[in-house]
Length: 447
Image (cartoon, rainbow, N blue to C red; front, side, top):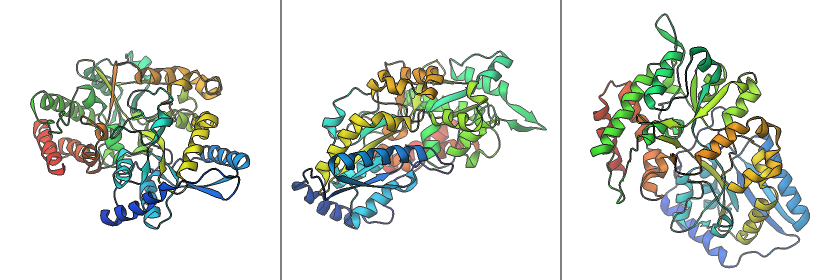
C-alpha cells in the first residue's frame, strides 16, 4: 500500500457502480482467453501494467526495468500509474471494457479477493514459494498465493526521543505506560491542546481502519471465532475490547484538535511539524522526516502497540504484484519472475523505508544494505524486522481477522464499523461496553 502523497486513501474497494453480474460476465470472457497464452517473441507482445506506486522514484525504477526488459526480449510494457484510491476501480473498468491490464500492484485484500472470486486473477504461488517471507506477508486464499509481495506497511508507534529524555520517560511496556507518557507530553494552552500527546485517528476511512487498532489487537481481541461467529462482544473479548475503548477515551483527551478529519497526511505532518509527540505510521514517515525535517530524523524511535499486560501487536497492510488472466498471462508471469530476480532490490530502494521488505533474503542483500539511508536508519529497520519474525509481536488487521482470509473481514473494514465504534465512544459519550455491543451487532448484520 503506497501511502505517499497527502490525500492518498487506502481504498475500500467496491464495484463502483458496476453490477457484479456484468463484472463476472466480462471476467468469464477474459478468463477464457487464458487457454492459449502467448509465448515469448522478440516482437509484437505488449503488456499493460497498472501501477499504484506514484512517487517519482518508484515510477523511474519501474520504467528502467521495463525498458531493459524490452531491449532484451522484445516485449513492450506500457505502465499506467495511478493513485491507489482508484486502482481497483480502474482495473475493473478495463476488464469490463475488454481491455484488461496484465499486471497490477495491489495493496488491499478486498480488491484482490473480488478479482479472485470473479475468476480473473492468475495465482503466482510457484513464484512466491521460491522465497521465505515474514509472517502475515504471503497470505493464501483457497490454497494459492494471488500476489507477489514486496513490502509491509506495519503501523508502528513513533515517539520523540528528545522529548522522552527531557521528561525522563521510558519506552512504554504497557498501554498504561503509554497513556502516562502521552499525558506527560501533552501541552495545553488555555485549556486547549496545543501539542498532542498522541495522534490516533477516528474518521470513517481507511487510515483509521489501518492505523488505530494496534492496542486492541495487543489485548488479544477477536472479532470472529474459528467458525466465523461474531465474538467481539462475548466473554473475554468483550472485556478486552472494553479495556481498549477505555484506553482510547483517555488517549483522546491528549490529542490535538481536528481529530475527526485526521487521515494519512495529518498522521505524518502533525509529527514532523512537532504538533504531536507520538503518531502511528509505516516506514514512510522516516522518509518524510528526512525530506521535511531532517533534524527530527535523528530524534525519533519506534515501538509496537502494548496491551494492559504488556503483550505487543501491530496492525498492518501490504503491497504486491498481481497477474490478470489475459492472452499475455504467460508473458506477464515471465516478466514478473525476471523483475523479481533482476530489479526487485531497485524497486524496494525507490521507497527505501516505506518498502519495508517482506522477503527475508533481502535483509542480507549487500546492495540493499549499502543504501545510505538504510545504513543511517539501520536500527529502525532491524527493529521492524524483529517484529515480523518470531512470536513476540502479533501482526494482524481488521481485514485479516477471522480464521482465514475472507471477504467477511474485508466487509467490516469497508463498512467502517470499527472507526465508528471509536466515534461512538469519544464523540457520542457512550459506555465502552455499549460501543462494543453495537459494533458486534453491525458486524453480524454485515455477514
